[in-house]
Image (tube, rainbow, N blue to C red; front, side):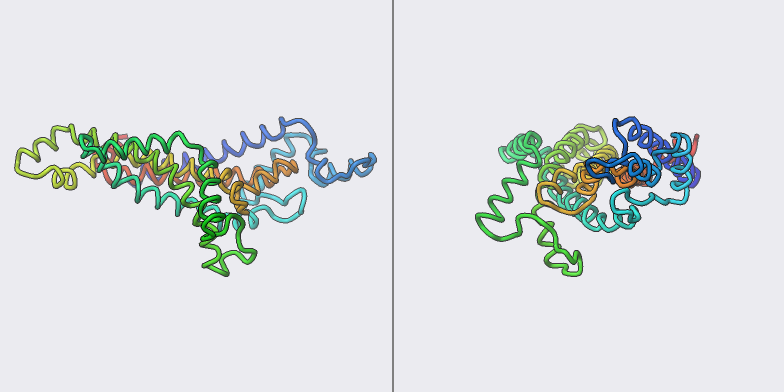
Length: 319
């Protein structure tokens, strides 16, 4: 297991470097000059030259690449072209909104999807099992922003129970106000993610219900529920964990849309603003941190799979 962790960590580091190189190249292929973000209409040649020198776009690409890799090795994401402030502290501040939003939505979706997915599979011949499956299919077809707008209209405007948008200026210094601001976004994401997870949990449970070891347990006198709890959940969890990692990563990246609907100052708004202003360091920083989080989620999913399934540990020990 230790050798696997070392190898997987090395692959994670290489993947992050490769992602950084791809982002650097793609951003430089975009038309226009990032120095334009610092210039007003009618700027003269001297002002243009000074702006290009400030952002470094007057240097050859390989010089910019060398500086970028040197900064990345020190985990320095540079300063914003627009505000001239360090990018990393701004990202960490905005993560205090995006991470709680993503993790709370993921936890709520998991609490809904796992029991309902198992129930819909174990009682597929009952009316409520069919109803749960039908509702989950409907949830997959509904866009996340539509659910957000519907919740805002119903809960915030009609019932006046929660704020429709925004986040407290002093952030988590007022925990109750910050929590209230995240309730509707969390429910919005959880409903969509939960519908998707429910389908995977249901499918994995159906596979387990048809397995030979579960039939043997039933033949030895265990009820279906006892056999499923004692033998089925652990075996069915292995493929589901991979899906959970993918869903958590996609939710983190998809939070851009939800943050836009609810006007939350998270990573999504920083990314969109950076793209509009051609602020390369901000865009690179947000995408790199997002990539790192996605890679860490995949890493954690692989480790948890090997902890649950001894066969995967044996395969890893053989390589």
